[in-house]
Length: 142
Image (tube, rainbow, N blue to C red; front, side):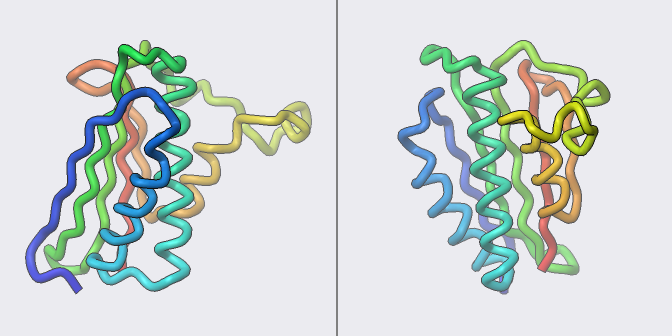
């Protein structure tokens, strides 16, 4: 359980080479937040998917752009893990994300990331970041 708060801030290149490191840190922060093994696994999937989306869709694999990840285990009342992932891309309107369960989308190879993240996390917010790009903010409570 978290005594105060622990914060890790990462600035990553738009490359998939550091995904394992992000996952390792996510797992450790989940433990510090008091999450059980199952919750830690699903948070890990959500974080990986968010970073992959930021690299692939947000930054469009542009090596000159970065992905910013904040992982914060905090204990204001109920212990929780807060995650923020931001890219430097053009952004999109979250209201216009295709429904992955619609019949015309069921066989598509992509398009389920946000849907999955929403189902794994206790809260999810997608928005244009004040610094530019898109950000996803997620919370998982212990």
